[in-house]
Length: 237
Ligand code: TMP
Image (cartoon, rainbow, N blue to C red; front, side):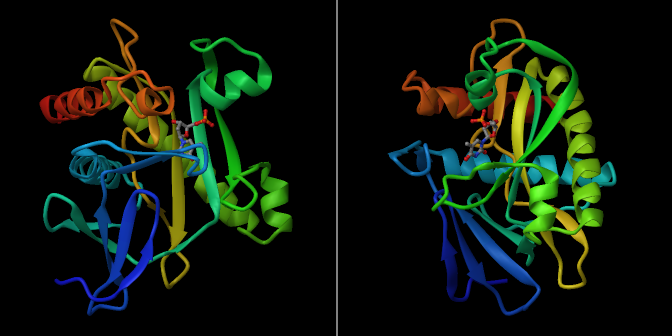
């Protein structure tokens, strides 16, 4: 299958049409942004790692009964996925306080929750992805009540699968962001990516950050952290 016209270029990926109207090709870039594109940079080799990692994890989730957009990896940066219409919500699951949660609620990073939390942000660059509850999402017709229930169920199921997998690999899954889409028949599937760009990964022993926070916070060692988390994935699949 070959790329046809480019349909979209996002911050970290490009999306191409294919000869099949139900399939797209996503191509992962090394470009990194943070704070709604205000901070820009390059993480050398990131596209290759994110493509591989996302595809491996999505295949694992499919086996666990969670439907995804994944179809086939065609080379180190490009993957065939099912075409979806994206539900314009960022779905964030947290196991441990960090990032915007810590800032918003004044909770120290590292506080472990008794049960995971879920939150939604409205995907809007113009509005800076504002926090939104499910009633707001339904009122704005971003998703139906049934779709919200399905998304919540899948998001918590993804958390259980990923938490257990990463624990085996010596990594604590702190939090992550998911996006869901609708196939042409309306079926909700997991879309976008699962990678160090979209998850917080802390080394279980040392607490070392193995994710994009190293870029967001100018901590250095960004490429090494991506390589390390990819190594953990490969060793524990
Ligand atoms: P936050 O603490 O900044 O809200 O981030 C929560 C999780 O979501 C974290 O794992 C990083 C991920 N994330 C994205 O994937 N995209 C984004 O635009 C933001 C802000 C966070």
